[in-house]
Image: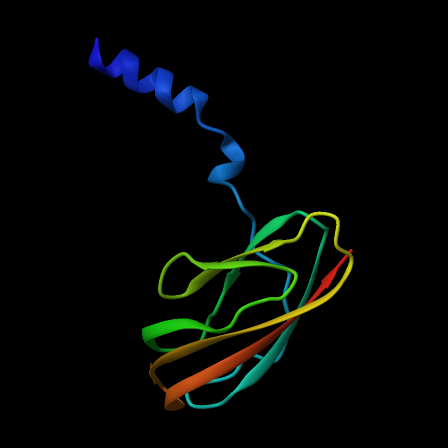
Length: 118
């Protein structure tokens, strides 16, 4: 009986709460200790995951600057979730950082992210 109640709760949970695709990012990947810039486009009101992928081991990460026209939330040590403000069209910028050690460098890297909201 407990499993039936659990299945009912799962069926009432919106799928969109769990299924955000990765942002389609352009820019040049970097290494720990070097700052970088990234770009992506998103539709007004939509959400995408923004992974920070650097070769090596990420020890710590966070948000340096919040966006002005959307929300940014950290999901785990390498992934952030961006949601563009509903009804807004234009540009938005935010910054995230990662600290770690890789095969080509170590230290803190700040990624400035430029979003185009369509």
